[in-house]
Every structure is written in C-alpha cells, then in structure tokens.
Amino acid sequence: MRRILKPNIMVPGGYQYTQPETGRKFGGNSLFKAQCREILAHRKGNHLARATLDEVAEDLIAATCDRVPGVCGEITVPAPAPVRQQRSAARTQAPAPDPAPAKISAPAAPTVARKKCGSCGGRKAK
Image (cartoon, rainbow, N blue to C red; front, side, top):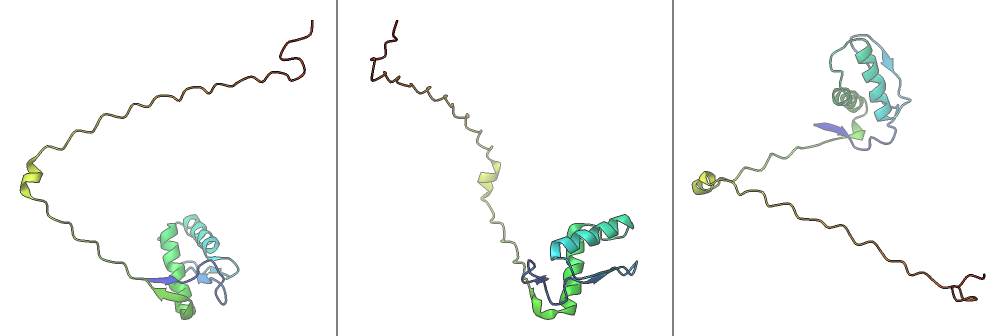
C-alpha cells in the first residue's frame, strides 16, 4: 500500500486531483487533509461513489504518487499473530466471576488551623 511520506508538507505542485466522473479539477493550493475534505464535499454533493474520508485519501494518495513518485513510499501491513490454542480442559471450565469492586472511601476533610492575630492575640476589641 502506498502512502505519502510527509503528508503535513506541501508536495511539488501541491495535492492536485481531478474527479473522473465530473471532470472537476482540484488545484494544489491546499494541504492534504484540507484537500481531502474539499474532494469529499464535492463527492457527497454530487452523490458520487467512494464518498468517505478514507476512500478520498486513498484516491488522493494514488493521484499524488502517480504524479510525484518521490514523495511516496510503500507501507507493509504485518500479518496478524496466530492465536495460540488453549488446552481443552481450560475451555470446559466456567469463567471466574468478576471480583467485587473495591470500596472507595472519601478522603477526610482537611482541617484548617486558624491563625491568631499577632497584635491582639485573636481577641476583638470591645
């Protein structure tokens, strides 16, 4: 699968795209994500196929990589790891019940020591 190596920077000539069904040309003045949103709006407004953001991104990548191959690279998706087989005895046992939720107690309210006035010792004048 091809991808653009640095999609956050402008490629030479920009991200240009022509919608085949309508002939609409999208100039290369926008960054990748903005161009995808503009193409997507055009496709949805004209009820065209491949009107999801992922599909638009795939088409824009393909068009850009065909036009400027130096900005693209191949990405390989690793195969999923095989699932280990469990012993048959473990499959026949009932699952363990969920442990009881831990009781959470509210923290004690902090006590605030009142400071006494240094001049009168905390007594009000009468």
